Image 1: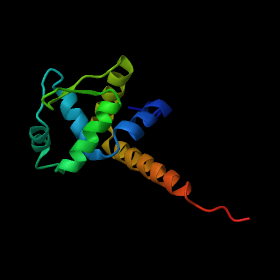
Image 2: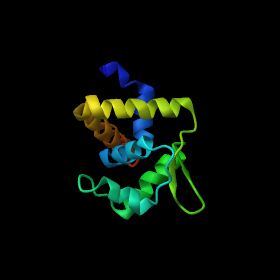
Image 3: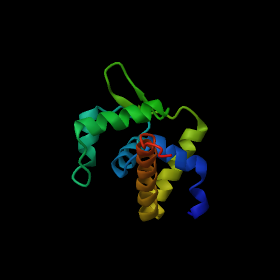
Image 4: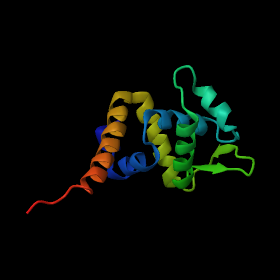
Length: 130
């Protein structure tokens, strides 16, 4: 995987849908079993002991995935990986490849984009001095 694989479009996907390493691991877990419907607590437990996700974080990540067109949530609140388009599926494939081949680079990109988003939000509240 080349650095060029981290395109602007892929980085926007990360910034909006995969805001942490835990979110990436959760999404990749779902994508590995696309035919399966997961109970949220079961999904979180399946990542342990390497990753522990709080109920609040789990709910936030699943809401991000749903808003990003990556998962379906059934009436019984179970979750299934279901990308809304081929572009979404390609981004998740790229995420899986980056996680496998260049995890340190991927983690740095995830946190740099998150920090950039936080900084942009903070800058919106700065007072302009004249």
